[in-house]
Structures are given as C-alpha cells and as structure tokens.
Image (tube, rainbow over all chains, first blue to last red; front, side, top):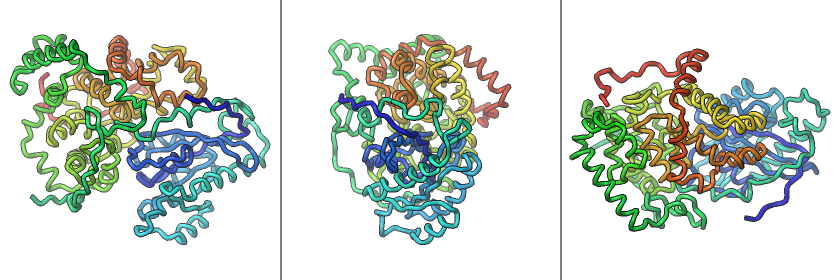
Length: 215
Length: 363
C-alpha cells in the first residue's frame, strides 16, 4: 500500500457535525474527506471520525471532524464530543421541514454542552432534490442571520458547496484563533499538549476501504 | 389484509438488478481485498465431513423441532456450551437461537399478540423507523429492494416492538439486530427474540442499551474501559495518554452486538455464544480484538489509533482465531463486581424486567 509523506500542519481544528438523523451528515463528511458519496450508506451508530488537511488563509490546517448519530436518544453519547470543538456544522435537509424546525433545538444543545465561542454554520443539504425542496433558501438565510450563524446550501451527492462549507467554517475558526495569542487557557485549541506545528503521520486517505462494507 | 402501516402505502420498488453476492447474501464489493470474503476459505473435504458430523450431533441434541432441547441442556450444559462455541450449524441456527434465547416459549405463550401489534397499533416511531429501513444492511439482497419483502418485515418487527415497549420505542441500531434475526427466522419469531433479549428472558435485560440516556451503553463502556486497564495495562495506559474514550470505538459493539460493521460470518458466531452465554462475550471479543492488535495499537498516536480501533485487519477478524482467544479471557466475576460498583455509584441501570415471572422460560 502506498504511503503518503508524513504531514505537518499549523493548526488542528476540531469540528462536530450535528443535525437530525438522515439529513446527510455522514455523506457530507465522506465527500469532504474522501470525495466519496455512498448511496448505500448505513445510519451512524454513536460517532464516526475523519480528518483532512487543507490550506486555510495560507496556513496548513488539519480538520478533525466528529460525525454524530442524529437520533435524539444518542445525545447521551454524542454531546460529550461538543466539548473542545471549535466549530459545529449544523445540518438540515432542505426537503424535510421538520429537520429545519429542529435546528433551534440543536442550537440549544450546543449552548448547553459546547464552548461558548464555538463557530456554528448552518447547512441546508440535499439541494439536488430540487422537486422536493420544502425549505426555502430565504427562510433559512434569515433564520441564520437572526441567530448569528453562517449559512450555506450544499449537495453532498453532486459535490456542490461541500468544499466551500468546510473552507468557510475553518477560515472563520482561523480568524478567531489567530487573533488570540495561543495560551493554555484557550479551551478551543484541541490537543494543545502537542503544541503548534506538529508532525503527525497521515493515514486516513490511503487505508480507507470503500465506504460500504458488506455487512 | 389491509394494514394501516405507512410503508404499505407504497408499491415495492424495482427489484435491484442481480449482483454477485457472498454466501450470506451480501453484495460483493468490487474491491479486490474485501475482508469478509477473503476470510471465507475454501472448505476442504475434511472440513465438510467434520461439518456433517457436527450437524448429526446437533440434530440428535435438539430433537424434532427442538423437542429434546431443554432436557439435553439440563443434563449436559457443558456439552451444549462447547458445541455452541464451535458455531451452530447454519441450517439450524434460526431454530437454535430461538431455543437458547427463550423466545420460543414467549411466542407460544402469546399467540396472536404480534399480529395485533403489527396490524392494529400505531407507533410514534413510524417515521423514524421508515427513515432508517433502507439504511439497514443496505448491501444485503433481502433488504435492498425498496418496500420489498425484507424491508417490510424489518419495518413490521421494529414497529411492533416500538408499540410493545413504548418506553424503548425505536432506537437506531435496533434495526441491525432485527435485520440479523430476520435472515434466520420469520417476522414473528424475530420479534419475540427481540423481546426475549431486551426484557431479559434468560439473561439480564438489555433494554437499557436503548432507553433514554442509553444507561446500559454508558455502563458497559465504563466497564470495558476498566477491563482494558486490568487485562491490557500498557494499552489502557496508552489510551489514557492519547485520550481515547471507549465511546470512540466500542458503542456499536454493544448497541448492535457486533452486527453493524463486522464481517457477517464473525457476527453470527458471536451471536451464537451471545444468546447462550449473555453479554459477557461482547466484552471478551472486544478485549480479544484489542489483545490481538496490542503491539501495534500501543505505538499509534490518537488519530491513527481511532482509525485502527474501527478498522481491524482481516486476520484479526477470523472467527477461528479471534473466538478461542476471546473464550480464554475470563471476565465473568470481575464484570459482576464492576456492575455492583457501577450501580452503587450511579444507581441501578436497568429496572426490574417487565416480563411476567410466569413468562420467564426455565432454561
């Protein structure tokens, strides 16, 4: 198996993917980290994890992304993963009004469990299902403005705006982080024990099997 | 028969075009080194003869339609245990699972109940269940066709359970358990086996895996963490240093009893033992997996470690290697102590079972 060179990065940003079950969180993650979309994907049980290293504002940033099960009962497990997260991608399905209505409950969940300075981005996914759309861009946009969230619509299936969504939230995090001096009291800087510019082996991209395993 | 269930409002989707499947009915991936298939070796003449001998022994042991089973288990429990650990013959698996789980007795004591639950009752969880149906074993031929027979059975069992036990309702993960059962038995049989497991017909009830707060998941994960520290101290230390929490890799081991992402032939062997001996086999298999990979795992930094804990190599997943290793790890007594400690600290996780005493089968 081919091995990539070990990577260096300037920042490590922990981001969580949250939102109702079935809105496409896992496929947004696989599109972003492996450029894959799986039509035969399984519902997420507990948490999943993936990383990708990319350039943000001229810096090398490693995004460490935790994908969570969407069903309410799983919050008993998943809410522990909000702690230390610098960003949250709050996803709804543009064809499912209920998943948009529930956005406010997810925001409350973040307020209760996440750090107060967490950057939140609202994502309306599945824009490829044009004939089924039930949440308008305008409604979501104005809701996001009211709540002070950034907002974007994506299609993980057609790979539209997925890159942009992650780039945007990572840039926002970077702008906030880089304004502050790095200090031990900064709760957001995950894995601060390792310090800045760390050499860590990269393994995800090459070892991953196809997204569907057969059982 | 008119069923007032949402899924029945839909016509079945097109039958998916045939693709090559493995011996359990999962679509083969075109990836060359697909794990489940690679481990299934060609069976030699010796192995075939051995399997036929085993099958004869098994048939004798259970009698016609399970009539001699209880008698045999009472007389020779250790023979039964050791035969089950070697794997139940696939053609008898469905029947034996019902016998050892106590579900057969539940079924006989509750005629007509399942039908009632499926046809006449409605559940608040219907939409949740439907949303996950096509995301449960999506690569298995039985469950692939939209609104086909497999998906309907799965829906019916899950809906019936969510009505039978409204406190549990439906939780993601239950579908994999029900789906696995449905590959070996009828809807009604699968439903009662689910009841037997969650309500504790033979072993401690497992409904706490799915109740609000997932209390039993939390308990099992904390016990697993402790057992790792005790059985594999170097690895336990490494996990602590790298801040690895068992929920990062082991939640689905418990919530779906290894049916979510492990090779199917391994999952079946684990289920054989799980139904007879209870949840401790999940701990044993988990510890065996970690032990098998111990020397690699203790060298890995956080991210690689999380990845490795979710993607075990095929040699670790061969039942004939992994299971003997799991059987050799002794956890029963320590698990009892840890349960007691946990309950002292956190209160009793699972309240007393709701199965009536007289429904509890003698085993």
